[in-house]
Length: 193
Image (cartoon, rainbow, N blue to C red; front, side, top):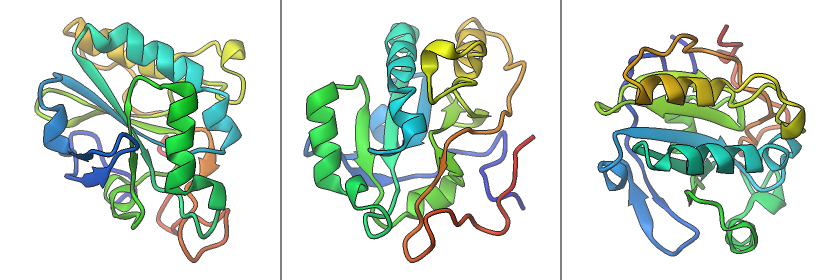
């Protein structure tokens, strides 16, 4: 079995604290026909280099019924800057248009099979996986991107079409797993395509 959630699989449940002081579950996003769950963090240059592209996608598709939720599963023991207080500070500064949740125990990252930061998962109205992988082809410098994989998938599903390219390889830093070297990945993890 693949480490990463397979296409067509149901979105794993979660209950996580957000930087806004609320706790969130998958059901809190039930009003949105489409849900993008993405694994992110505070420090990764692939995240910080693509945050504004992700913001544009979230804002562009909000009125099309798409909700975004960012989850930080990185271990603060492995990378202290990824702790919850830094998450709160980051949201206070950037005011991103998504809930930013903390997966301190990393159970949600394991359930989804998060490989990198960032790693995107797009779910349909039945909360089955329609797309997973990268958002753009150059997340370190979003302005240099020429391929917008997540936007293409969002445009297709919100127009009633099937996702033409449902799998891409996420580009970014490894998830920082607790008790492991900063560059460690589970042995069963591999490229998606």
